[in-house]
Image (cartoon, rainbow, N blue to C red):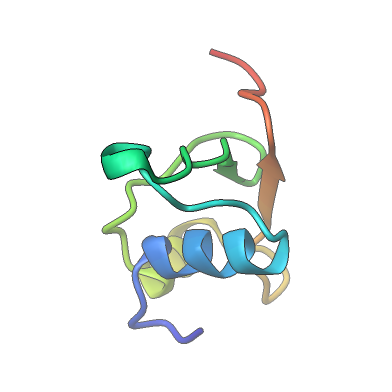
Length: 75
């Protein structure tokens, strides 16, 4: 991933690494497995947000910390 990628790329990458279904349930396909990503364990960015923008605003010590959960952590 690079800074010009959208947050959706991070979502797709983690789905692949975690071997989670990304289907939508339409046309008899498997329903997507739930995956929730949080920047700094604080908020869920929009999938179209650029990673560079998130890093510039919320990066710490040279890293953008993204937490994930299979169930909504809070709501």
